[in-house]
Image 1: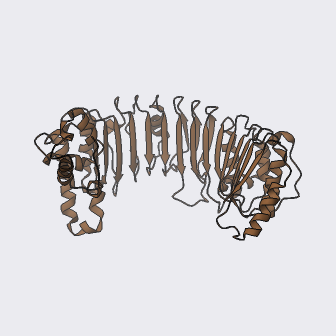
Image 2: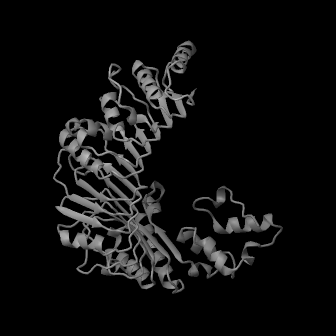
Image 3: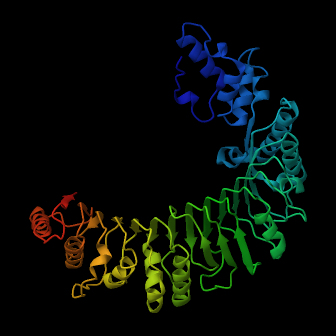
Amino acid sequence: MILKMNSKSMGRFNVKEVYEEQSSANGGYDNISLLPDCILDHILSYLPTKEAVATSVLSKRWKYLWTFVPILDFDDSLLYSSQFEFRHSINVTCFMNFVDKVLLQRDKSNIERFRLSCRVCFSASRVNEWILSAVKQNVQELDLCLFVEEPFVLPACVFDNEILTVIKLEMNCNLHLPPRISIPCLKTLHLRLVTFPNDNNTVQSLFSSCPFLEELAVLDCEWMNLKRIAITIPSLKILIIDDLPFCSVDDLRGCEISIDAGNLIFFKYSGYLSNKINIYGHSSSALALINIPTLSGRRREIGHRTVKLFGGLVNVSSLRISSGTIEALFHAEDMIDNLPNFENLTFLELRGEFRKHSIKLLIKLLRRMPKLEFLHFCEGLGQCEDDSGMKLLPDRALSSLKTVDYKNLRGTNTEIWFLSFLLKNAVVLEKMNVYWSKNSSKDPMNQMEIKEQLHALPRGSRHCALLITT
């Protein structure tokens, strides 16, 4: 049986209309109601709770099915659309009463996932009651997005819990932590917008009380109250830090964050390094994504921090970095020679356009990657200065390079020289894919001349295929 979904069945649909439409399409037979309860509950778990509860009007068979759904999803965002503004207080009351009703009437079986997105200003005590109710029903995944206008303290049982495997917390206020923290089964922890308290020991306890944590994301959080934090989690596999500051980029008096995670396979950092990031361990198959936006101040110091961050990524196998990150490295040119050799690195992707940097400094970075096999330019070289008179590198610098993808070709002399350099020195190169910029010259003759010029360049590899496409 295939359940056909049309415009009525998308978004905030009329459940009864869709149900009757499906029955009519099947010759009057209600095939979906013939499915076992466990399958119907599974289907309902994909709906927002409001729509799952609405199925109770379909028939006697459906009246109480929603009470067995193990996933609850409450979101008050509908209250803030313009069409409801004139009934704002009424809808707030309806939302709160609805959550109360669902938690009261549902079957008391365990909750797999509880998601709540709402404004705490309605009633902080009732929000806490909802969270407590979910915890009492052995919730495994807790996803809270709370918009706070006054100080708000989560129930202590959130952080002293033997059942929770996932905690996702978005809350624009201080994170008040209880004296006792123990979450032994937690595998995923996401924190967004929280301000860490002025208590290193308590925050340290939060990270050290999750012995089996595999995924940690700290997004747009405020670390300024802390001096030093060590994240030492052997089980950690995924670490994401989005560190874009609330304060001035010129303020680098942040926290020193030390990371020791020998099984880390994915690390993503975005920010101005207002906090010092030190990495002491990760897997040899790790992928790292580093995005430092274009700098406006304190360039030299941020550059030095960038070099230190890269020093901790010595064993990664794949690296994706932004043009701003390259710029930060270039502002610490005096320390480039302190970078280690990335002996395991086989994949390098450069995102964004080069603007105020030179190819010479880029190649200094490539020199540190003797086993590089794949080089990808997402936006080409941009307005990079002409270093076409630069001397060649030692042979080992490109001795393993097999594939080059170069996007956003404009046909400048600098680009042609650099591609010529790669073709000549990459002795095992198998293919180079070059893609024209959408903003490049539309003159077919000019493009043909550049294409012929590139095809005529000498190649260090006899088996290299050069493909130039729009």
